[in-house]
Picture 1: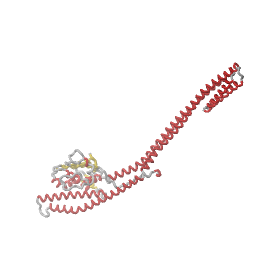
Picture 2: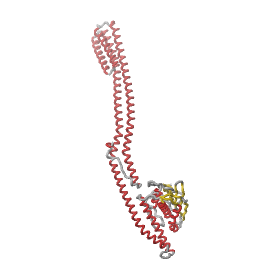
Picture 3: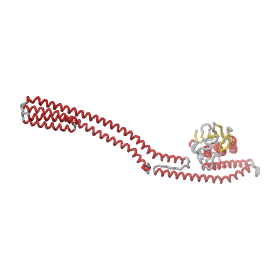
Picture 4: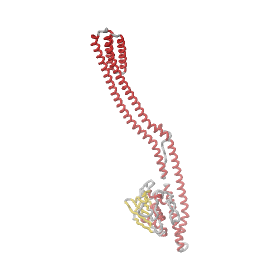
Length: 491
């Protein structure tokens, strides 16, 4: 049916309206023809009925008048009466002929008999000498009585013919109604088929466009966009495909830039950290308290910068799908201890308290990525907690899953920010007391790595005053991680 496919959406809409209007037009035309046929039949019956009744009444009247004139002529022998009789006899003949036009076969036979009796009366009146009324009275009376009886039978037969025609009209009406019903029953599925074809022809390309826009909005840029349908919608699909390719190019350029810049920053940062460690170890002489404090600040910020660079590298590599999971078996508690030791200087400087309740859970997962998940969540909690606040860390098994909670006593996450905090490079409100502003990809890395392990991230309300993140992920990672997507939930 490719020849039916219009070249534009407007043409498709016009074709659809034509397909929907065609069954209705057929139904209207058919109904009009049926009503016209019934109207003509009813009009014919009414005309025949009125004509038959009128002519029958005229026959009765003319026969009475003819009988009176014939009897008067027989008694009075007046030539004028004979002329009047002949005139009335002619009128009776004309009326009889008019009645024959619309009469049935039975009525025509009766009218022929009536004509024969009329002829007998005419012959007797014209050939019998006047003054013999005593001899003719009985014969004329019998003939006129026969003539009246024939007129009565003619009226009855006309009425029977009208009744027959009325019954036929009722049958025609019933047949027309049934025919219209079945035509409507046939046109209804045809209309539904037309609606389905129109919906399919328009709905499918629109769904393809909607799905393509949704994929672009969610960053799913690897599937080619193809729209089939009217040419203008296909052109729109081509524009979306061009946009997808362009977004892919921009994403690759961004990731390439991040990788290059991150690698460029790692070398001088490594030198800075090495120099700071030498100062702290007293390689150039013992430091006093003030100098050691300054060196500790340098080392703390160096560690924080290194973590940011590692996040950039991890995020860039994961976005380009150049790395996968490298699962191994390890215990969670030592990993949490290592992460907290890296944050020790910041925690001590902010006089924070650590509330750690971590079960010694055995995991089969990517240890490096789990470490980055913990580091980013703990770093985020430290960053947004006030001095003297408490960092809460909980971890336990729940069936085949690991439940990990990290919460703080900070201001929490405003409702308007919850849809964006896991987006890359979204920094939200600046944290007080932090000298180095974050890159805005820490929580994005958390979401990517948790999703790669088949887990979800939840933002929990009510249990702690600040931000509370809950991670639910399998203790044994699957061989094929699920496709990356939005696995963030609010509870």
